[in-house]
Length: 231
Image (tube, rainbow, N blue to C red):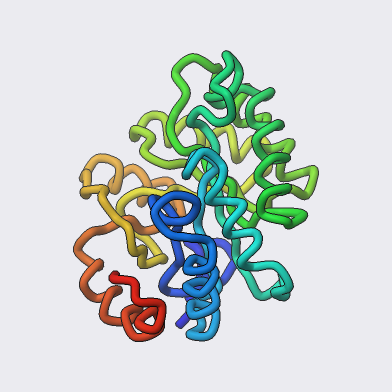
């Protein structure tokens, strides 16, 4: 099944394939590729990762596993913020420098020209929000991402980010709590304030909700059974 990502025109699979704590660390590349193939065979087209997962290795594994697939039939999501590489003084955060270098690195590892959703993995208290949102707008205008998202921002941070995004003419996707995507590795709890705010500004969401895990696992266990991996 497919749904729209919030109020955008992008359709995503109801269940997304995430590779946190698996690709590049706990699961060998062959097994990871087998799982990705099984996901594709059962209609999953949305794949979520982040540059920090396994210190960039998860993106590389996913890129290899998706090689040769029709790009137009996939939705690839990744994130930026946490330290990557050797951990230099500019290897983390949401500065213009780190965002620019991180998106280029993610695209190389994922072996794609663009990602469908590029997300701020956390809020950067040390970088002016105007700088961060301008850098994200540049990423969109350069054709390296279609949509911009945020993760675990406060209500006020979301409100201000949404205002700046509107001024810059980019589409902000809020990734937290309630939304259009049923996710598998989920650990965020509902917070009434953020939900109320996001409904007020009509922000689209990517769903992170542990309550749906059991339902999702019932759907994904059969496709991955042959890989001898649990849910």
